[in-house]
Length: 196
Length: 244
Image (cartoon, rainbow over all chains, first blue to last red):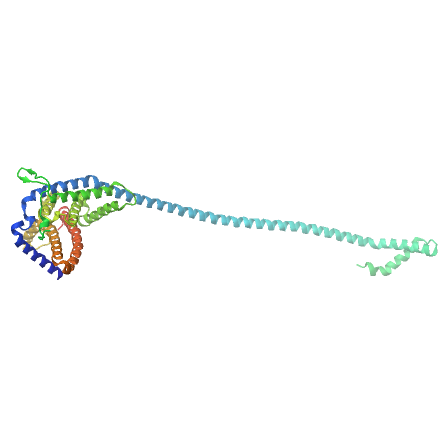
């Protein structure tokens, strides 16, 4: 609607000025052929120069710039991709190394533990044997001592009794008679003290 | 200040009169803005392509985005075969765009508001596309006028319509651009005149329209350049890939 009014106004104005200034300017200057040749000539000159310079000098440069940027960007992306892949493989390697070393560490630990246990066991065995031997020896000694003990005690008893008798009575008594008494006593009472 | 909104389209001589034979090729205000537009394009794109930094600066970004924009447009409409014509379409788009945009600056001259300029460009495209079509397909290019799958009775009529539509291409292409630019600039001038004539009291409404129109015209300036370039691509597509 507004557009229509605009056009009506323009057209009206155009007609009006056309009528009033017809004598002065002769209607549309576009239809005046006076400068047509000049316009065509200068159009050819300016557009020709523009086209020549644009197509020969400027547009190839812009195209080259765009291409070089494109290739640079794609190169960078490629390099980044490559590095990413590399780092991924490195990471994998690293993981492998870590897991491998973990297993190794476990193995070493196990081995060390086994070895230590074995060592302890063998040492313990040796020690046990030694202890057993010592115990046996000691037992033997004790047994021997015990075996010898009654005869020794007999001897001591005989000697002390002979000395006592000598001191008390002042006469020497035959040792054999004392020993006979002691033996007799031992036989009677010995069971009480040295019974096995 | 001229009240006539058409005076802005008047061409006048700048400097001496130059004549070659019977033809007047004097340097005019139209010539000036053609040269200025071309030089501006060359300056911007030269700056934009000089340094090749990985992270582009503003001018370089502008140049490269324009390049990608036109490249995509050609690829979408005309395919990969149109690659050799990239520079031509790029120059055409930029030339039309810059002429349109320079016309938006007050007191400048709009080169593309002259039918002779747009018609020359369109005729050049038309002739060029037709030559390319005949070189690529020989007389087989005439198959363009015979669409497949049309019943035999309708065929003569369709061929006539196709031929007329083909021949009217340069006219429609040139008149579209010329009429858009002229109408837009005339309208802006008219509303500007209203602001002056209605004065401080009533001038605010046309002034606000003027502001809105300026924005619209900048859009139209870009859009018409785009339409001009994309239609060139479509015509080129017809000539390169003959499937109708």
